[in-house]
Image (cartoon, helix red, strand yellow):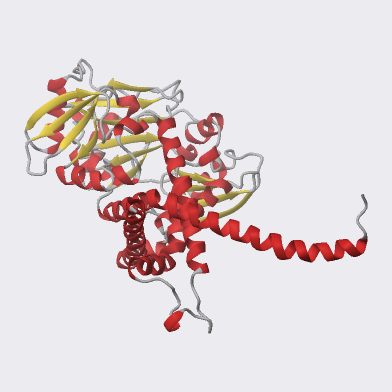
Amino acid sequence: MVVPAQSTCRFVPAFNAFIRPALGKTARRWLYLVHRWIGIASCLFFAMWFLSGLVMLYVPYPSLSPAETLAGGEAIDWPAVNVPPPLDGGRLPQALLLEMRDGTPVWRVTGWNGTHTTVSASRGAVLRPVDALYAGRVAGHFGNAPTQHVERLTRDQWTVAGGFDRHRPLWKVALANASGTEAYVSSTTGAVVQVTTRRERFWNWLGSVPHWLYPTVLRRDQSAWRQVVLWVSGPCIAAAVAGMWIGILRTRIGARRFKGARMTPYKGWMLWHHVAGLVGGAFLVAWIFSGWLSVDPGHLFGGTKPGEAAMRTYQASDPMPGLALDRLRIAGAGAVVAELTDHARTPLILLSYHDGRRIVLNAATLAPSQATEAAIVRAARHLESPALLRSVDRLTAPDAYWYAVGMLPRLPVLQLRFADPAQTWFYIDAATGEILRTVDERQRAYRWVFDLLHKWDLNILTLHRPAWDGLIWLFSIAGVVTSISGIWLGWKRLAR
């Protein structure tokens, strides 16, 4: 049947007058239902995340820093070093360094195929097996304390991450000191790879573990852990967005206010929930959304890196000159680690000391030296060949992508920008030519949608800690008030 045009014109306004308010009413009802019922559970998570996040500001997850490794290491026994570095046809492996292993100098070799081997640097020396006696001795020397207990394990709460996989099983050594130190010794390298204290362990049970949903039983399965984070965070995002929307709908700022010229109709706990949600709502939505992105759903932000062939050309392209061990004994006195490198076709020896000092020597002459900017740029062109090198900048201060929270990163660095399809940038140590970081277009986007929204890690804030702490505390308190009031209101509703 054909409807006359005049009848159609009369029908449309009638449809709009009846259907649109009905749809609006249904949408609003669903908005309230989502916020009310999902919000009851999500507020429990929000409260936990905000409070644990404040703990993490001051007690991060235990991690053995390079400075701690150097401070606890043994100085190289140079008179015992009489085995030349193990090279691959005269060229360097991916990484090669000299350090001590329970009183014996050793070469640590990382091959391009990902293998890790330890070779004695002293003829006739026998490397002791990494057993309980060895682990207790090494950990005691590292922590400068007597051994209390030694235990062999595969993983625990502080060694659950995948980075420890090549060191498993581990030897956990409890030391008899006031800090309650526990050190973990690798069964493959014999080196100390993790250290925790009683204080760190206590606060991390209130900080990193609940914040990251990081119990060992869950985190040991990377895939299962990622799914839990995604499916816990997702509904929380819906509850937060719905709450923010409702908060705006229930606020009257103009002349048409609620009774008593109030901008909100609520009192008591509902008033606290409404006001705190408005103050910290945008922060909460941004924070939970960025937390959901922390596991990179769909791997949208996976970066690209140069291939192995390009890295070998940049990092180990020429045969290394012969190493004069007799002269190096004098130049390297007191060093804890000696690393051989050939970045940008510049053979160097990097000497690191207990106090964190680093001396760079020419591998052939053993005179103080460093890579030149021209050599770095010339070698780096092969990393993204045939892409055009757009710019080269020397950074003496942190920028938005090369920074460290609360401290200065290694400086100066060279920033090289290429015009390849991924728009790749390299941050390269100006002294050694080492590639410190590679970021492409996706990773730069991730820096803003995750790091900024989750950590608020702008240099202007993180390098001035009171300002950064104050901002985090302000919005976290608003989030805690919103969460606690939501928990109380949800409990009252469930009780009814």
